[in-house]
Length: 364
Ligand code: GAL
Image (cartoon, rainbow, N blue to C red; front, side, top):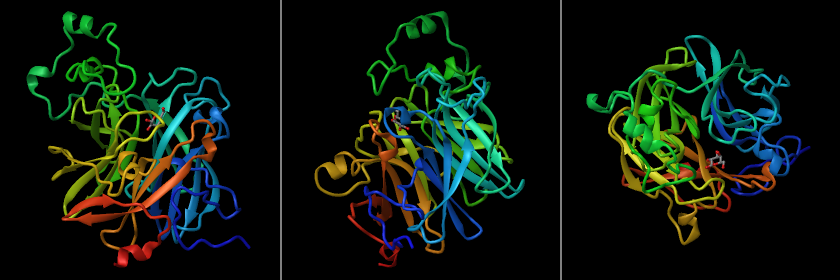
């Protein structure tokens, strides 16, 4: 008999039903027919584990503390020609269920093998069962040929020769840069599709779904509605806070307001979280500040973690779990999970540290 868990211990080893540390990094959780499914990157040990050698693993649970290993939901391919060939970079997988088609739909951030992070592709896969097997459909840059909803008509044209020359040789690697060209990259990528790296999916109360991704060299978030079958963009998207360099987006809705938690762009190293709010998902977004409460590093490094998903707890109105990763790029599979309850102060979400906590938190 494995030990039964009856609490969360953020940052500790989290054994599954076989006693093995859960291997579902950069993950997300789907609730379907009374069961929670946790999908995430299966990472192998060592630095090699920063690339994908297995695929997306899935676990199931009915209480959120105890997780049963359900195997590999989406396997990397042995075909060197496949976009998801073994050794590619496959990050932040999220799965949603489409009631119209009866299919489970997975989106993830994909980088072709041995090509760094320049590809900035979105991958899509589909399955008949939550636990898979998922069938890889395609990898692409979203929103090719579509202008964002929230840019003036005067900007809706290709780059001029002078603008192209300006971009040529501009150092856009890494995080925030004062010379970041706020209005050029989405126009450069209009024809071929927008860059899409860190991402999440969000299903609204009316059943519409959104792909939220770090775009334009990580400098600008996009919120992009999905088509009715959830397999492609619907054709309407907005740019959020151009030049603010928000990564690791995760979303919750509370009292009619949309809240996005994000991080700054510092690779695997943690940094202070940020909170953004909007009254409508494709509307005007405003930055509120750091949602973390507590002393010193707890707020300056988001409890030594980076956001990956917000899990709405079923049957408890307003109860949400902030899911984050404590990455270990030297030994990838040893990365830890930081799950913390979201509190609300004056209607605004907050996160505080707990060495150990349980769902009774939400009864208070
Ligand atoms: C992080 C990102 C991770 C991964 C990493 C690579 O900023 O959130 O998902 O892409 O960079 O350095």
